[in-house]
Length: 490
Ligand code: HEM
Image (tube, rainbow, N blue to C red):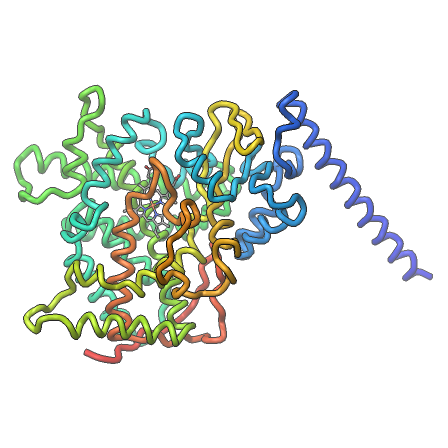
């Protein structure tokens, strides 16, 4: 009898929760319908979630558990394949767009959409010099940054240094007696590369200090913070670390400015020197704060993203022996065809790594850290018959395209051969974004991964401590995978 009452109470509670949940969500939906007035009939399907918090809880839950696809899949199964869904995330009414046409449309329309990352993300990771300036100034800064890192000819200049960083890192990793945390170790490579592009090889102790602060920052796991800037909250701690980092970089910029003034610099200019010389639209020079902001923005944008790509490429290779074999053979052939006098990788050899580039593309398709980019409509925009009201955020969810079987049959499968003679339809492969904000670091990132995999495939193997562990197709909480790097040849 008592058990019967327990079941009755549980069932009543559950039923009440379902009803209240449904009612509150509907109420919130009506609120936004009311706000957009007679345009409400043009809003796409979707669900605005709970008042104020919207759908952030299921979003964070799916993101942190590595099941982000289920967030979109639920929308598709509930509302059909409209390719655009209304929702409420990061405290704002938002649209998710996930067809190649719509994503491209948003990314290429700078007149009606502006970059708008959630405040908590832009304050921690963003660079004001990239987002809070006129579009003309953005173009100019972008040109300055891109000049040394975009395009194969420019990158040829960095190849030797990247090779040195990779060879030393692998040597060091293989000399370690104990298993290492794969991601933490690999992350050091792009960090060294970006600081080299920015600062040259000066200031090694300071570079180590910057790295320490970045580690401290990452340990806060700020992406999952709820953006409360009060003592005791993760976001607050991450902001404090960012402040320390900013002060440290300001001191480096100040020091370099002084050296330039005193003529103590060599002829070769690093990015920091180029930025010190850069003039704004109005003829003013950039302040030290602006340059520090660009540097921090570059490191945030470029080191964890590249490290993620490196790690997944390596993991997938070790999980797919047939792919490993084919990729290794390609590298062996490249080295075999090399004149005996040549001791180092050449840029034309990197260009011959066709299969390896397919491995990298496939890893980026499956695991890209930038699963979505953020915009905001600056006016009411009509897109495929639906309206995106002015002020609403737009999440350009490229991952949904990368995982769509229409463009990538059997999308969860790691299959570099799918890229053989593959002409990606426009907008179906967007790991680096598109339009005026297309990632300027894409070439240097791919170059680092290629050089790393070249040396790894030729001379090393990875002995994972837990080989049963399957790398999830997507995760923001990096698997703490322990492994040994074993050197197999000199
Ligand atoms: C696998 C590695 C990388 C991935 C997946 C990636 C992805 C992206 C994406 C999707 C965007 C577009 C953001 C938007 O439209 O709002 C972007 C922008 C950017 N990336 Fe990367 N990135 C990578 C590596 C790098 C590297 C190595 C650097 C620097 C050396 C870098 C610097 C930047 C900068 C400065 C922007 C802003 C560009 C602008 O606003 O004009 N990224 N990246």
